Length: 140
Image: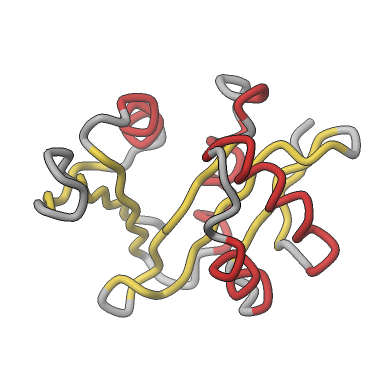
């Protein structure tokens, strides 16, 4: 069973390792430290192994927004991303939740749609030639 909880300072090294494995660098070190300290980071574990993490804050026009969802490359397609997103949904303080992904990121688009998120717009010019698709989900 995948356990998702708010990340603490004790999880920071695992989050950095997951990020480096997925991205090939540790360029988000300071950002991730800030997310953990601000209590915006979540981590997914199974049998004591860190599988993935997410960062969510109230940064999208005052609404909750899942800023990052990163699953260790060896753990993808096993429900880790869905578990992280469902946990954030359950703990969301408002009836609206947003996230986004690049147009080129088909796995994340499929995950969003599988979990009931709907496309809510598009932002050009963030990544050259790869628009950012905004997703929205109404929560009960």
